[in-house]
Image (cartoon, rainbow, N blue to C red; front, side, top):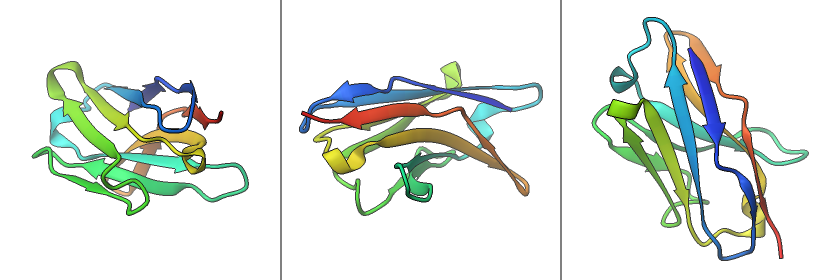
Length: 116
């Protein structure tokens, strides 16, 4: 499975960004799998941001609830993370992930920097 995250950048506090995660791979059927977003800030452990299941049901970490929205386009094999009301504390490398059996697959990450 290959996961390609994109859309990161520099944004001012209170701003918005939309991240994308394109999935591909022989035998991998995107619509049959829940997909996750994680993030890792400098000096911190990687933390869960949110997940979307095959029914498009979403779950979020308390720190982003009400500000971030995960969606998916099964036809495009792509997951999205809409981030609004961004805060300096949201600065991190954002990763998309999928768990297949006992293995977690990760994208390369995209940097989000929130700064004035």
